[in-house]
Image 1 (cartoon, one colour):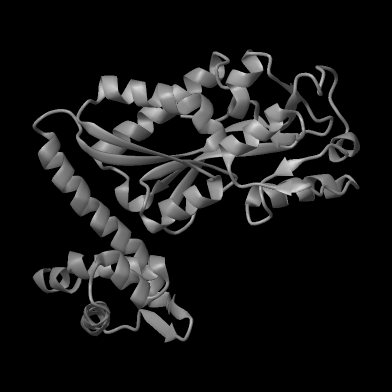
Image 2 (cartoon, rainbow, N blue to C red):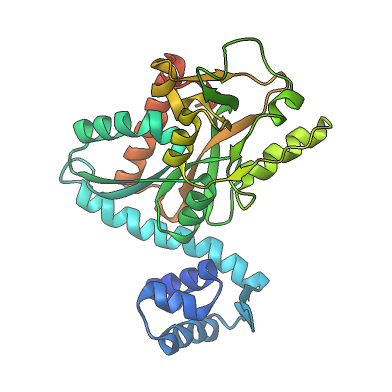
Length: 315
C-alpha cells in the first residue's frame, strides 16, 4: 500500500492535472509557476512509476492516452479527498472558511449578485467571496481551467473536469426602449429579425444557438452589431437606436422603471441555467456552503418572482 501511495504522489498528480487541463506542458508550467523541465520530469516520473504512457506529445500539445484518461478521473478524486480532509480538520474548529470564487453571467449578475453577496456575508463571514461577472462561455472555460470554483452557465453539459447541473430555464425576449417598443402580444421571429439588433458576437454559443433557432423556423437572424459587453449593450438599447434579445433579468431595473420593454417571442427561445462546479473542489466545506446557498437563493428568487426564470432542479 505504501508503494502504491508513493506512485500517486499528490504534487505529481497536481502537475498531471494541470498539463491535462492546459493541453501543453509549457502552459502548465506557466500556470504552476514552475520551470518547464520540472513539469516534464514530474510527468516522466509518474509514467515510470505507473509503468504506463499517460500522454501523447505532439506539435500542438498533449493528448491523453486511455491510461491517462483513467488516471485523470482518479487524480481528481485523490486530490479532492486530500483537500476535503484538510478542510474537515480545519473546519472542526467551527464554520467554513476560505476563498470561494463564483462566476455569474452578466444577465444573472444584474439580479442575483447583490443578494448572493449579502446572504453569504451574513451567514458565512469567514468565507472570502470573489464574484466574477462575464459571458457564460468565458465562465465555463475558467471553471474548467481552475480559475473559478463554480459558475452559473447556459446550456453546458458536464465535462471530465466540471459537473454541470441544470437548475432553471429562462426565455429570451426582444428588449427595446419604451418609446420605441410598446407592450403587446408575442412577436413573430420574422418581425424580430427586422429590428436593428445588437447581439453577442458569433464566438459565443448564445449567438449560434439563436441563429439556429431562427433558421429552424425559416428566418435568418443577422445582427447589425456584434457586442461582447453587457453594460454598454444596455446603454445602446436605452438610447433607442438598438434592440437586443436578452433574458428579462438582465434589465430588471430598467423594466421596473419603465425605461425598457420586453416582448416575448411567439416561438420562444429557451435556455437552461446550469451550476457548473469543478470536480476537484466538490466536498470542500466552504465551496459546498456557497454552492448550497447559491442554489437555495436562486430557487427562492425565481419562485417569488424576483428572478423571472423557471426553477426546474429537483433535490
